[in-house]
Length: 610
Image 1 (cartoon, helix red, strand yellow):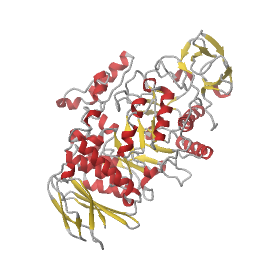
Image 2 (image 1 turned 90 degrees about the vertical axis):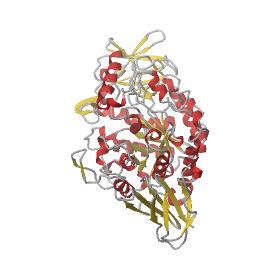
Image 3 (image 1 turned 180 degrees about the vertical axis):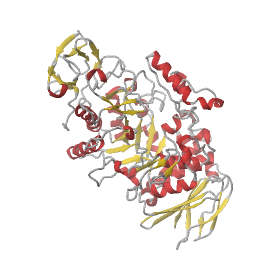
Image 4 (image 1 turned 90 degrees about the horizontal axis):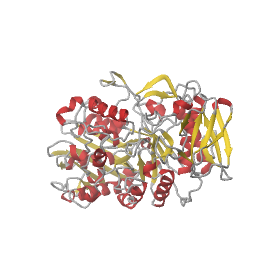
C-alpha cells in the first residue's frame, strides 16, 4: 500500500499533469473525458481490473468524466470534488497546493480531548466551513479543544446529515469543497483545536451512487439497514479495501485531520483473516511513523465487544476509542426519559452506576430488547477508550420532532446531566448548542434531487413514526424549513437563562481540564455508590493527592446524604443548585468527614479535599 500519496483516482503529478488509476473490472473499454472540449483519452488496461493513464492535458481545476464502453459517462468514484453535485462532472484537485501553517501543531493527547460535535450546515448562519472558522474563538473560549464534524463526503443537494454521501473522497461543494476543509483544519490548529471527521465506511447513499457500474464495490453476501454491504471480503474485494484504506490515509495526510470517527462499524461485514479495521490500523500506524504525527481512530459500535478497541491482541482491531451509547441511555432514563425502543433495556440509576464503573452496561447479561445475552466486560481498558455524552446527533435527530434536552428536561436537570458527563472517567462530548440550552430542534433533513427517492424518504419517515400520531406529523425531511429550523440561534447566548447555562458549562469544562482527579481518566481510581431509594449517585475520584466527590440527586425532592470519610475537610468546587446558576439554594462551602449534606432536587455538587 502506498503511504506517501494517493494512488486511486485522478491525481496531479509533479509535472502539473495527472496520473489516473481507475478500477473498472466490469468495463471492456475505459476513457477519460476532458469536459472542456469533450476530448476522450483512452486508458490502458492493467491487472486486477485497473485502468491507467498519464496525461498533461488535464490540470488542477479541470472537469472530467469517466467513459465506460462508450455508453456511460460517469463521475469518478474517487473524485476529490463534485462542484456540480453528485450527478455532475468530477474536478481535478491538487491536494498539495494548499499552504499549511500548522507545522508546529501537536494533536492533544486523546484523554485530554473535550469534543464538540457539530453539523457544518446548521452550526452557523453561513452553513459552511467559513461559518465554523468564524466561531473558533467562541469554541476556544468555551474550552473546546476538539471539534467533531459530521460527514462532509459529497451528498445530493446541499442539505443532509451527511450519512447519504456517495463520493467518500469528495468534500461537499456547498460547504466549501476540499480547499475549504483544508482551510478550516489549518485555522483550527492555529487556535489549538483538533479536528475529528466523521466518515462512513459501512454503506453508500442511494442517489448519485454509480459505483456498481465500475466494479464489485458491493456484495450480496450480507444485508445492512441500507442495502447490500460494501465488499470487504468477497470476490474482487482487494481493490475495495485499497479504496477505503487510501481514503483514511488521505484525510490524515492531505487534510491534516487529527482523528476519524467511523460510523456504525458494527455494520461493516468482513470475515477476512485480517479485518478491514485492523488493516486500516496498520496503515495508519505506518503513516504516523512517516509523518511523526498522532492520528486517532474512533468508532461508533453497539456490540460491546472489546475486540474493536483491544490494542494488545493480534486478532483485535486496535481502535483508539469508541462512543458509548449505553452511558447516554442509562443517563436519559435516570433523568426521567421515556423507556421506549432500545431504552427498554435500561433501568435508571443502577445502570448509570454500572456505566461509570464498567463502561458497558451490558457485558454478558440478558438483553430484553435484543432477546439474548449481550456484551463482554471492558476490564482493563482505560477511560480514554470511551466517549460519553448526554446528547448527540443520533439521539436528538432520530426523535420524530428532534427535541434537544432543553425541550425534554428542566433547567436543573440539564445542568445535572452535564455534570454527570464531566464527572465520568471518560472523554466528554457536547452536541452543538447544548452548552446554552439551544431550544431549536435538530431534525432529520435531506435534499434529494430524485423525485421518487425524495417521496420514498418522506413516506418512510412518516411510517417510522406512525405510532406517534398524537404528537403530530413527522416534519418533511425534504422541506428547506426543516433544515432551517435545525440551525443554532447564536443570538440567544446573551439572553437568560441561556447565558447562565453557558457560564455553567464553561466552569465544568475548566474543572475537567485543570483538576487532576477529573482530568486524568484512571478508571481504577474511582468508587461509585448508589442509593436507588433516594436516587443519589456518589462518584469519588482521585489522582495522587487530589481527591474529589461528585454527589448527584436525580430525584424531584430534597435529599440528605453523608460525605465520604476523610482526614481533611471537604471544600465545595461546584454546586449546580447555587443561585449563581439560577438554582434554589447554596450548599455549605465546607463540610467535614462524614457530615450530612442536603441536596436540592435534580442537582449535583462537587466537593474536593482541602
